[in-house]
Image 1: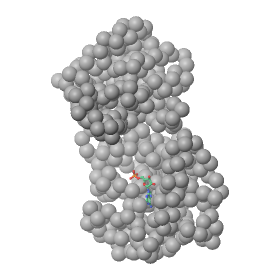
Image 2: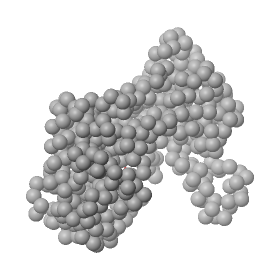
Image 3: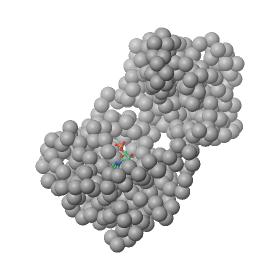
Image 4: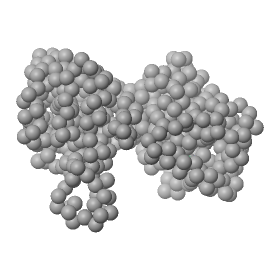
Length: 463
Ligand code: AMP
């Protein structure tokens, strides 16, 4: 698809014009209003600078979290569901989803610009604020999802958004699979609608992976939800040289291959698809040969501890000696030391135990395949184990480090967003040691599956 991007308009076309840019500032905000990982904010800086330097008045819009769902829950809990149905979303009840802290972070990141914030995203108050803007100014609107019209792709809400500006830009790849007002309905109403620089970059890398991957091509896939990844796997398997499987998914693959997997969760909905894939591509699909195992109760205990730490808003010492395996474990005997409830199992897993991370031999095998794939392509989506818990993070940490090594040796390395970026950070691998970190989780998988991307298709439509 031929994509119209920022450079498709003359520089002068932006001068003095209002530009409405959809960004994805859906970042984690702690109880103290501290912003967590701000990669998504930083990735929009090139487009922001491109437009402001050309004299545009730049209006940024984004969603943050799921205020509607939270509000619905709160109303349900207080038996005020009737009130909810008639009143829409009560902004005061959902202050925790305000984008105000993001405006503050953005102005810290680009101190030379005048960044302001307005506590709504449509209406006369917003228009008044826009009228006050000078060329080069930036205005961040309040969370789009405070209006239910956003997710409903409501025509009137779309019209209100579109009335704010002369030019529309989408720089939010990670939401481009959604048919929401700020991505689709509103965008349709503009004559001038363009892809931002971050969206362009995402599409360049991900189109290469989908349509014409550099060879040899290794895909590393983990995490737990097979449902989300099956479309991408289906589409990519014919082009892949090796598929390295880890995470909870691996146990469904192993089970389908006739290996006993104990109490590990099995996804029977996709069991037959996996069986077929294993028989069609027996030489491509590589499965773990050993596992870090524990009991359901110990896993639960550790998960509760980890959630408590999060709730307290503490970062905690996630790499404390008790809680983590040595990052490059080389001998099985080392594994039993942190806790007797955790052990290393080769081959079958007995009843009462479940796999929570790839084992040491698997780590070695996967790491050497990844890091030796110089001049090839490695794409990594999803953690190798329950990486939120230090004890079960060894596999994920080592994959992150091998990705960095492959990059330094000349391989193209691409990381699917969400958990995988978090995993990279936990392994202390910089995003600069990877060719490309995608800002999208769900959008990346949908794009790789060849699914429709309304937010991208709308940019090339004339309505
Ligand atoms: P996904 O959203 O499908 O990429 O899954 C990410 C989640 O998978 C993370 O929260 C991990 O804790 C979880 N996960 C990875 N490996 C395992 C495993 N072996 N058992 C249970 N959960 C896992």
